[in-house]
Image (tube, rainbow, N blue to C red; front, side):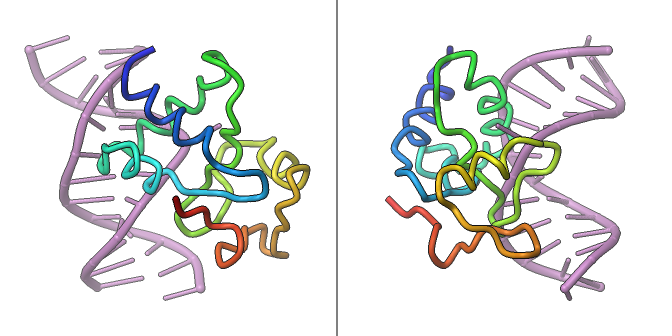
Length: 97
DNA sequence: CAGTTGACCGAAA
DNA sequence: TTTTCGGCCAACT
């Protein structure tokens, strides 16, 4: 567990139910605006560190993360509605601190 | 030690 | 609108 991962997980943990955010935004909030890619890596292992709502983190465009199978179901379970094109409605669900 | 890769992003074509 | 490209940085080969 390094400091970077800790910051990321803190931010992710602050996302309220029914809201989502993007990797880039989270990286920015954490203080590492360029490390968006690493955020993905950390979140992939986030479960190992503890229970975090990493499924609430999506692409900046609102599309679900590529290469991830459970995210859609998890979001629906949280109450986040998806458009027919499998995209999250950022207008309503984009989380801004 | 050098080259790829990745749950990415934003701008440009 | 979709595709391409460059940039960023840690981990892996």
